[in-house]
Length: 113
Image (cartoon, rainbow, N blue to C red; front, side):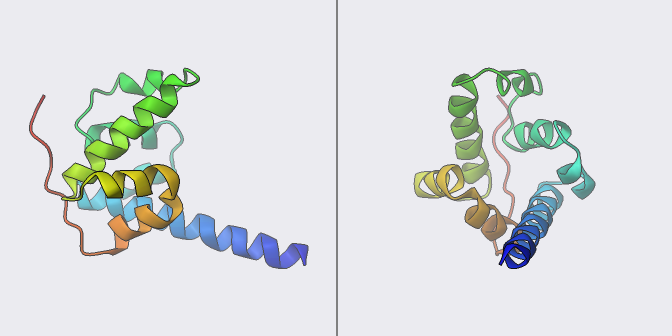
């Protein structure tokens, strides 16, 4: 039974990495950035049109939750989705990021702040 759980876990990890890779490529960033710790969060901030120093805020407990929701909302808007998709990214990211990566969503960008 443990072997089956490990295999399922590994499949989910590979799908998530591939989904992030596709999201990065759709947004015009290098796909390999999805597998580099901390750099992937930096790129996510850039996709959300937020400054790179926001990466530091992800290290502060409780603040990181608020920052993640803000960044997810900006990503949702950048791909042409609304608040409902933001909730999906925040609560069920393992489902909604593959929808962004493998689905028909196109990166539209956000206005410069």
